[in-house]
Image (cartoon, rainbow, N blue to C red; front, side, top):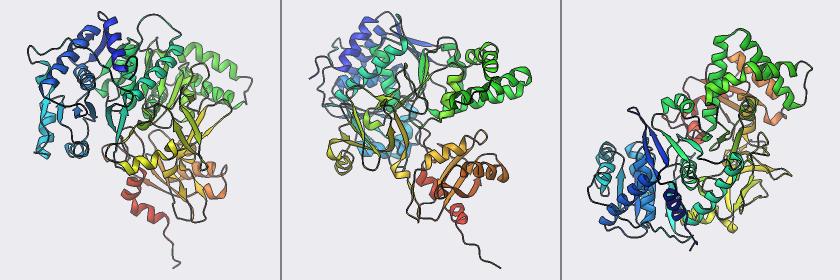
Length: 553
């Protein structure tokens, strides 16, 4: 038993911030706020409701709904009552939600709205008992003053379902000890970032809370008594970020890439002197990073830092921002350098749901572009003979729900096998090279990690392009591309990249498709990662065409 559990620590922090605004829900009708006292009252009310359902310790409670104060209160109440919370992604189809619930067999389904519940029942008439937030929080007279929340380190508190790049999601069992360790680590790194500044951190929260990184960010905010602003409409991200003016917030690379493209497009439309300075200063900054500075570069960077970059920063993120935090997928090093050029640090985090979201975090004082920082305190990382990253520590999950054989396989030898290919330098900073499952093995026997080559090609392509390399069991690599680009333009880019690569890594054929890879067509995970197997199946005809043997007439 912990001397104080992570949840007891959160409750103590909320009590200490009883009169401070802890949560702000950004909705169309205007902000909805909750102080520490308000949130504790809602948690107490939800706990009383759960006790009325005669649930037993270890029962699963599925939670599906948009981000909001009530969602959070329900999440914490479920854990405090000794139940296991199973947060689900509200944007999934009812069929997908039902498949997940059949896997974990919840005793209760708690929905953010009656409409969500009705969609699930229509697909699954035998669904477990369900309740809406309205029923939980509008019921009169239900409240408990009890705020004890002790858990043993080994107690499972949540089952988080992975997005699954192969299309198959698995339930990851997270323990109280896992969460306690991560919250200590995240708060310590944020102390460095904020330089022990007094007052509340301002944190912008936009990612759905069923994802491990978003959930851990939220819980860390409670421990730190932060002021957390929650997005409820993804179309308003840019506007809200400027209004909230956060100190930091967690991003995925796709969002940072989109922001970068938007700035480029805006300046191209504006033209004039600002565009001229912007273009020359970008080239100068990249030359400085590569160690090939020209005599005129100082002038262009000085002009940009005085006349252009401050305006971009102000329009993009306001005046308070200390750093952008990026995780969930590989970040292009050019994008990281781009934001650093603007004076906006980008800190990388690496981890998986199975490691309670985090293995490494950038130290704000020692950021190496292209690397994801060093292992967090108490966590060991090493490379296998095949350069797979192995992790051992209190952040590693307890296992997959109802999948003992898969659990045994990934925890072989007492180390979690991440499936990621990596490298580590003498400073202890890690770099993620690719995924073992993504390795392309040519018929020649050469093993190729596609991600580094894809990154080189994409860096030279126009905005909006997507790329997947194929060639497993074939004689050469080919590229499947989406986006607006002419054949001769793509060939020119491939020629440039191929010139830097050994013969077996060169891309010989390509196909440009009008259909993009999206979450809606199931070719991207909900975190924006490529579903390579599904992409290969969807574009099987186009891929076969790239390897067809042409017969002479």
